[in-house]
Length: 72
Image 1 (cartoon, rainbow, N blue to C red):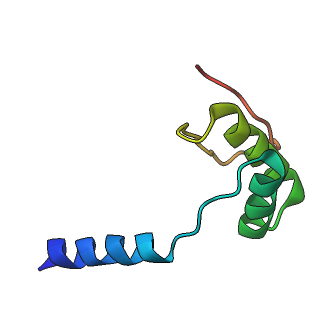
Image 2 (cartoon, helix red, strand yellow):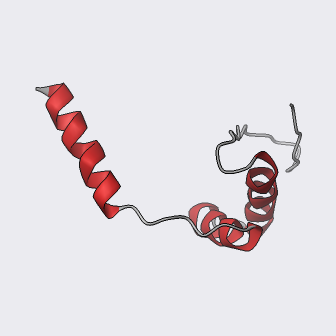
Image 3 (cartoon, rainbow, N blue to C red):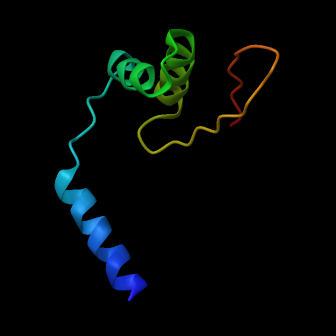
């Protein structure tokens, strides 16, 4: 039931997916469309460029402004 449907969804996503253009500018464009915020897009692009293709980025809400911290 649900497992079959989930597998079908994953297969369809793989068929529809397009390779991500590498580079900070491409990441910033995607982030800008997703967030609607140029400054946040810059921060996200920098973070993703830093961690690499297989890296992980965590985003947390803040009322004090936008910043990027790196933990290795």
